[in-house]
Image (cartoon, rainbow, N blue to C red; front, side, top):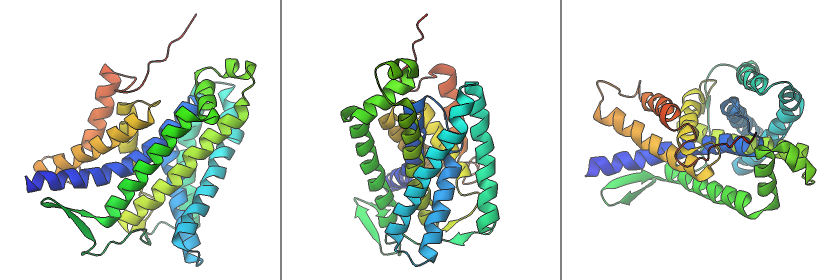
Length: 298
């Protein structure tokens, strides 16, 4: 029982990291109808910016907020200069462009900050004694802190999409941008805001991930982005709550698989369950468990 409970806690901790990045994917898709394959690298750039601001002597929390502001600007600029003109040509062009942006941002980060790992400051206490004991298992404060941040962001996005005019406008634009224009919705502003919000969330997520890992490098977000993509796919790209729950599930799944099957999977192949989830969902339920199927009227 103790082993199982510890696996669940560790999995929820890791899964909360995946959920943060998956939230950014969902925000872009729900607001624009596009998939942003550069979300992970936008998060990495945000993590580097937080590190840089901290190195300049800015308090860590303020540094993270500044990185989120820069992330918002990066996301909005991406939509304005890249996605908007290419989207008028072909949706597939946006797909290719975000992959190119993924490679470009990763190379740019390496050119600016170098390829070596940077020691990263901690947002939450992380000493060996900084744990909370629940029944027979332990949960570290830093992991619990990331989990709480993820829950707060999920609640805020739920309110955004369900209770605000901006959220309604984002859903309307993603569903049918032409009809949204006809009813007076400023579609261009909504699209820029959607990409900006997603990049800002990514910047926070990347900073928290680097903090948990105690370092940041060019490969920090690769595995995390794959697992987050699996979470968004499983939960549904238009369901923030579904993506969060799926991220937690994948975290528990891969942690349990690595622990119970160390000879077959272990730490080196623990991302394998995420690949299996992506393939299975695309085969049997492409819209995800909580996603809605897009209806085309002709």
